[in-house]
Length: 350
Length: 166
Ligand SMILES: [Zn+2]
Ligand SMILES: [Zn+2]
Image (tube, rainbow over all chains, first blue to last red; front, side, top):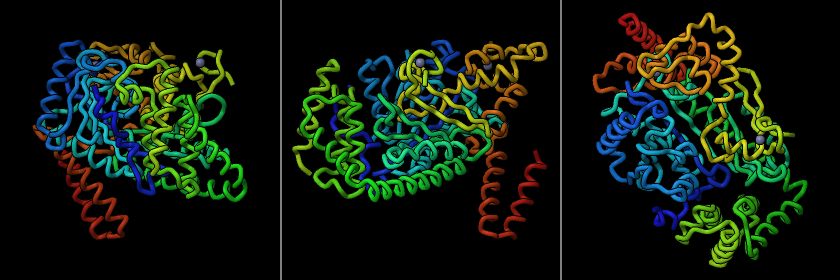
């Protein structure tokens, strides 16, 4: 399944405007539950099936969700699930889902709805670049349309009721995926993270082997969901993200002033490896692409475009690679095929 | 630095979180981070709160089990002691059953126990007064930002009238 989708990069990797160089994507996730039905973890199969059919018919009635594809978890094998995860359409939690869970994917993949994940409903809206407000508006519209046929569990003190009390209130998680090689290289990132943490936002980075942040990618999201309005949360995330962009730009300026030769060397070496290597792991690709993305952002790299980089980033993920070639592969074979695909993508020129 | 969870492998995933001026740090090895759904920056869970929650609950509520009669939710059958172990509630009615304990806990997690966000449009529209009040609150905020104090005063009166009706 999804081989057609695997032919093009996901929405979060399709941004080409200037904000997309630093902020890859903006995402809103709303948690909702149907009133008077136990949450999925406590519900028996009957109850879960009932909830699923309620939600399915509500989706059918929603004008915003008129186009899309509805798949039940039982139709998805392991590779399908990993692919959807790489595409940011499902959560890690959903990857483990059993019977009576389902997924709706809206046209263009900007919207996805997980049914019977940790909560009955997880409405997700995804935009490329820094577009938190646009993402929120779409999620809010879907929420409103679904509420016309579903009665959500709500309490005037606690707000929207969720399985985990960390989501209660707005039920909203707003996040941006942000590329911060400048702050990572100047080691200022720790400082920035601790500052952001004081503002009710959470930052996470993924550290691979050694101490380098893998791909210099970070996710910033709101930590609390209760006591603030949706507008407050999205506005503060946007404000802080703009601040981080400024820090990142300053760090880059300093890097190119103080260590121009080393940075340029790092960027062009990355390009050389991608262009000629015979085996590449997905983690290595993530790091190499990070350097090239920095080079494009600073106007140094001209022989490859941002959309080529995004395409390579998308297709070099393990499940994308297998879906792209419609073939199951062991890691060793993947590394060879990945290197070959990247060579051909880079040979295509701009 | 060694992983805080298993204490065996080198920690490669580092997280810092400040909740209500309290700094919480987490250093995990890759395997443990993955187990805690925490290994990629692409995922939405900001902090492995089940653990965090359990540690907070331990201190604040579990220590005085004699005072907390272990209530049971009449809808789903969950007891508060079950919740404190798994960090997940069973149904919407759990929030009503455990209201007072949750009030404390939510203040610790979110710094507040009062919802100030959107209100659902429900079929019977029992939520209408709440939605109206929220709309007026938003308008009031805007009026104050725009320094339109005359309008702000009007809105304040309307909100007062609305909450008197409740
Ligand atoms: Zn460990
Ligand atoms: Zn319950």
